[in-house]
Length: 411
Image (cartoon, rainbow, N blue to C red; front, side, top):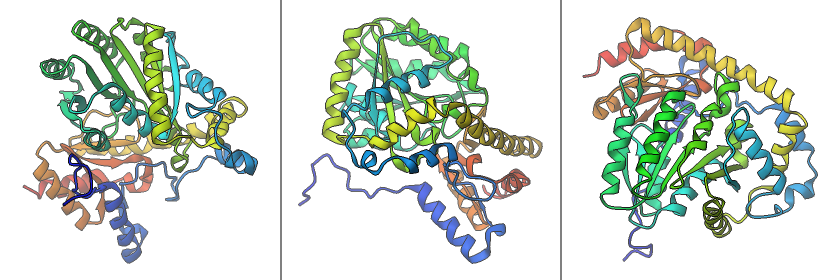
């Protein structure tokens, strides 16, 4: 007899990223750093192979009074100054002016997972991309939700037709739609929707809203590593065109923006046409926050506010060095991939590039063969993810050709 709830899955969690990263670490210990190519880790690493922790972020964090670090936040929804600065930061460079609320969450993960339980009842369905961060599906399963997948790509562009089909399928069994779109800087492909694609998606959501409520969950975890920061939020202008039946939840991650992965600080930014609808969602978010994590680290929120106000220009300058470095790494890999015929999904910007292998069984065999050759990557649906965020430039050179040769040997 199991003591857990009847709907609980008792299959142990298998975190492939950490498992493969551990294998790479052991390989380095045995054969040396130079013999191993580790493109697994989804955090920002420098050319020295060490985790990046921005000086502009952590010099100040270290100086924060111990009592401030020890104290509860002023509210389980987040400190008021934090909530204000998150709104200003997330929407900078856009003209988004809808009624809104900001709820502090434990990282972007907390924002996405809470969105699912806020808007869907047990047994209902959330719509996810077929190529995606694996935790989306885990979140849904833990909340006793079903999933329907849309195909991310049609050729080299976002597959709006597949999104439409997924919405129509879900509408057959429920009155509401919750759709997850991870853009800009999609994990794991590095794709960002164009302005035109966002306009078309907004029109599609408004049309779907004629049948019932539609909630867009926009995961922007990597937005602050866009290669065109000044334009990175411009697409949010489309949200001003939402009908009364469409709501957006923009999921923000301080973890990525500030290289503070372990501090677990983020936010859910709720936007809609009607103030009353925002307030309804806010109430449920508040209750979920209080019942689930209770409080976001006070000092993490205080530090974010300081960085984006008092040290903004210095912080942006420091961060830009690593954006430029990632652009160099991804450019080297993609140029050589094109030259040797290694097919990738359409990449525009961000932490990751994904090799296109639509047959998952073959992808598994290629992945295993890569590890035999001391190349460590992450297996994802329909592909193999290469983390440019942690791959030194010197190891990016020649990697695509090596991967192509190995892939061609696997049938």
